[in-house]
Image 1 (cartoon, helix red, strand yellow):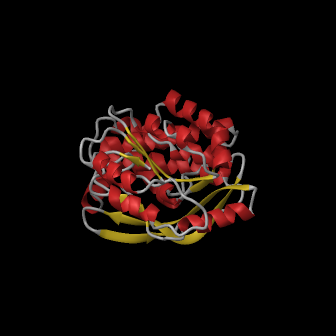
Image 2 (cartoon, helix red, strand yellow):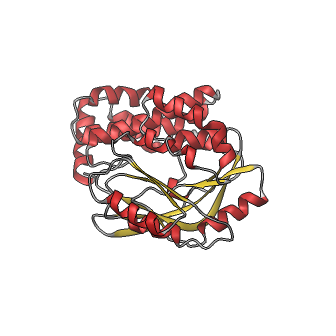
Image 3 (cartoon, one colour):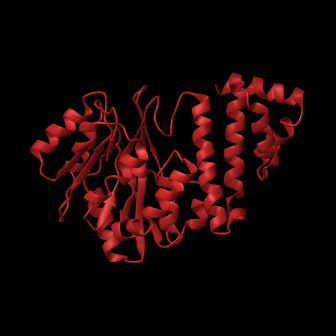
Amino acid sequence: MLTYNHELYVAQAIEGVLAQVTDFPVELIVGDDASRDATADIIRDYASRYPQIKATLRTANVGMVENFFGLDSEVDGDFIAFCEGDDYWDDPYKLQKQVDFLCKNRDYAIVYTNVRQYVQNVGFKKEIPAASYSGFVLRELLKGAFMSTVTVMVRSSAYNEVKESVYQVISERSLKMIDYPLWIEIASKYKVHHLNDFTAVYRILGESASHSIDPERQIKFIESVLDVISHYSNQFSLAYMAEPGVASKLLTIYRTALIYRLPDTSRYRKQFLRSKSSTLKMKVYNFMARFTLTENILRYLLRTFTK
């Protein structure tokens, strides 16, 4: 569990772990990245009352990547599950279900489930069924991430096989995510299973690593996703499989830039036009993006109906 300025949410995240009903012991490993609010105090209080909680409370901010991989030495269990400090598990049997599957299916290394999204500023929660893929799913992953991190459990031995490689890729490419490259590298070696249950809640805040109200930050995150896809699709000689997902994300970037009249709109337009537009919707966008008049009409429509 990674935390940073989660004082409003971290107690619920911890309680979701403590509420798990299992026939095996569970350790909660928390890494707080020098929060500037009361997050560390809340964690410290729980750790003083529950010996199964291991808390690393940093006094200097090291960033998400170092905070995550800095907890490796604390992990000694057979399986690892993930829950950020602003998310929570709401199924008390989540871990038991996932461990039962992995114990019976030794050739699988990841189990993920469906998730509920909770939009914090409006108090709205909805169920998000995950794309249901099981088996060797590397090709599907290269089209885009379909596993919500808060629902995922991985086999520790598989994690240990790839963690150094994942850390190297993230560091060298300055990626803004850990989970997606981690899933890809594990899926390149092992099978993945979708458990068709809702077990967790992913909280959407105004600002987070993967969600932002700032359109330029939105684009930077999507570009980081594209960097992951580019790196691994080339590594595994599967670039052709990634083309539909790449085109879709380039369209999202172009749309965002168009709506907010960003300075780099022209560059994003050219990137999208070079992509392979496979669907009717994308072909329409491709046509309208080619001419000043139709692009202006497109901008007007987008700003009117989607902003």
